[in-house]
Image 1: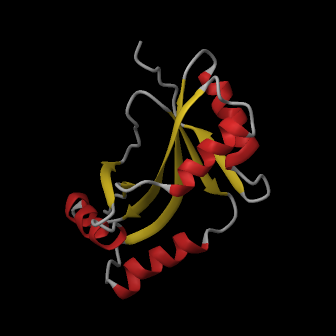
Image 2: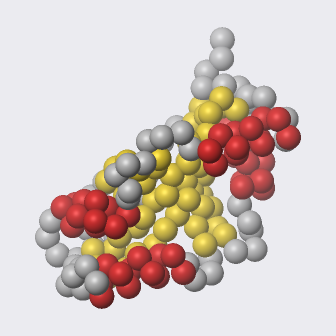
Amino acid sequence: MSTTSTINLRVWLKIPDAEAATVKNTLIRRMGFADSLQDVKKERLFSIIVDSGDPEKLARSFARELVNENKESHKVLFDRLSFEEGYVPVKVALHIEDGEAVSTRDRLRNRLGFSNVVEVKKATVWKLYLKGENQEQVAKEIAEGLLINPHKDSYEIMGKTKMPA
């Protein structure tokens, strides 16, 4: 009997992230979020479904392949996805076939020999550091106004977090 596990690999830049800085500037300077937005950060999320093997050992191997240790940090979660307090995480993923996820799956399977990789899903998690009330509603407005293309992307607000008082 085989049981599947999901290895969630969260990856973010150690160096300044130009895309996140551009999104922050656009939201503050052009879209009117100066009163509610404090900061924007971004992560890549790989959700790798495997049907056998030691998830921890596999996660180390996947991180070696998918994370550039010179400029990126990462965190691994098994069979769950959670985020730290202090920001509203907005997960943006393609609702059409994701060629990059397919190519990552094929690379892990075929080139690196991980035949136990069933599927790879890829997403971007935008970490919105918001202040004030209705943070989830503000995150929804930001996602729909700037972070997604409704023709190809879907988004999910992963959880409401509060800024420390």
